[in-house]
Length: 270
Image (cartoon, rainbow, N blue to C red; front, side, top):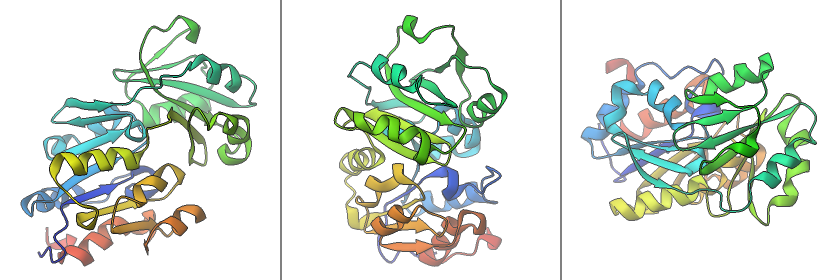
């Protein structure tokens, strides 16, 4: 294996990027992470998912990675919270607006758990895909917790249905379409790019030493933080415009193939 370009940080989105459409991790990804660590490369999972969901999926290498969850709203290393960016505006305003959106349901995301109110079967299926710790509450008004993100599950199409209702808040908060069924609301100064930049500062890593992979609009700012920025073949057109390079789709193990090509290893030999 070689590291001819002195890469020190590899960050990848999960859904639509590292994971295939069945929400499965690539074979031998844990061995790849171990090999990258031997080479002095920090592996970062940068996702809109909840930390506890990512922790569960990456248990065999949890001590070897950093997790940027909730679009960079929380950062964890060695099971410890190392950073958080809460929503400081009145989040009740956004919840009230979401009530107007047909077939759209909010998830109130906090550091230790998420809160939901609706119990439709399709919605619960989506919640359990991305959240390991959540509580059902009768009313969001009585929640006394620090809100990191509001995720909106849209059973029609997030970009065409929910986003037009919420884009008017973009002067107050980040409003990002993060998938076909999801719109995420974060603090105005919170995104994956900011989280990656903070890690770069902490570890003394430059953009030229950084490689990132993504597929959707909540990955846009992350593309600006790396010399080696890759959009998946299945990525949103705007993400492809922002990335410097393109790799194979998530169902073709595009992230692994690019790592193989760049670092000179064969995953079948690991």
